[in-house]
Image 1 (cartoon, rainbow, N blue to C red):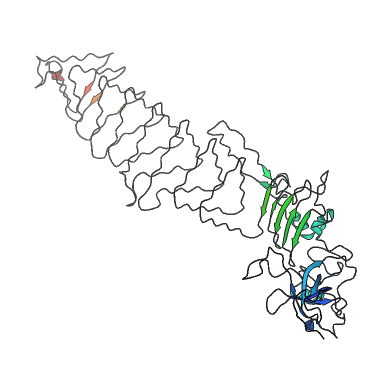
Image 2 (cartoon, rainbow, N blue to C red):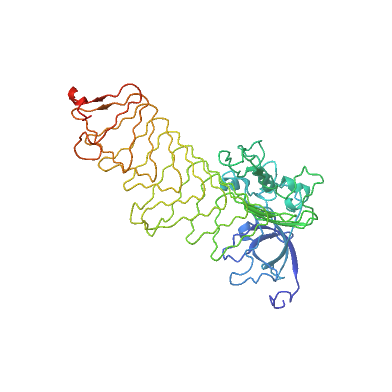
Length: 519
């Protein structure tokens, strides 16, 4: 017997076709156990799976197969048909797998026989708690279905790559079932995801009607519905699909008119690029995006953002917003704005080149001046109005001022009140000065009261006119002086009654004084 070199190819190749029955390589080299047709019996009692030799899997030159680099382990699973050769042609204990072979299985897997997936259906069901994500291969679709939906007498080619049959793939069925297109709050139903509307500001603007709400729909997976005419689906052999045993999918679809890229997680989260250039990203769970550097976004069209929850933004630097057109806000609840949240305080500056209008259905409450050490100003309120100013108050108006009140006007000032007008000072003096005439008019009685003296001082002429009676009442003495000093007959006082009677009544009046010239 010639000495064996055991050098691959030196003694020729012995080819084999077999079925993978085990991929749990204890050395984690990506090896699999293969039952080879014509070399091994299908009687697993005579040759158990655990006694089959480990086969190395040949990788392409794009995979270095060293130091953790490349694509490893191989994606062969139990039940995969493979082709290869024995590097030890004589002993046939060192198989090398160079590829896998798809088929069209006609019988279901029987774990009691070889050349099959030895994992029992029931064991897999127990493992996945009833979740049919993966089962023994080949499978009977009536009893147990993989996520791909394959059945007996169906090609092993991924159903997503088979053409119109791809529409029945469970992942695509679920994606279309989860489309956001029939929002219960939409009007009419099925309009899609609602977008924001402009507010109705009929009280302060000429916009009298609420803007009609818009909606958008999540694009259909694969871009075009099966009901579309003409229908464009993935076409065999242009859709290149990679699907893992748990249901992760990657598609490179070169079907004419339906060119796509799609990556999908078994949970349903996916990213898809459509033939027209549209991109759809859908996250079933939470989404996290962390950018260590800068982020730049340019959108040539519109942006619609709709959330059913809370939105929080934290900006540690400056925030600049520039709007070339109108800016509208519609808020269903409260608005709270705090400027200068830090101890240093902050300013609010607004410049409005047009009108400023507001309509408040409730109270308007404001405070000017520092309430804590955070304030830096004196609390002054300065308002300059170039044109007219009008205040209309439906109820009472109160001004409470701790300091002085000053009104300065360049022309006339008029105060018109339907009821009482009261000016009251607690301890100070009420002083009214006029540059020319000072006129007080009353449609009924006018009463001037003082707890002490009343002095009327005129530098020139004083006239008192009475349309009817003119009464001067005193508890003791009534004195009318002319020229100053003690009244005498030489100082003339004229009393000219406007009509018939002139009464000067005091507590005491001597009739003899009427002829003495004293009065």
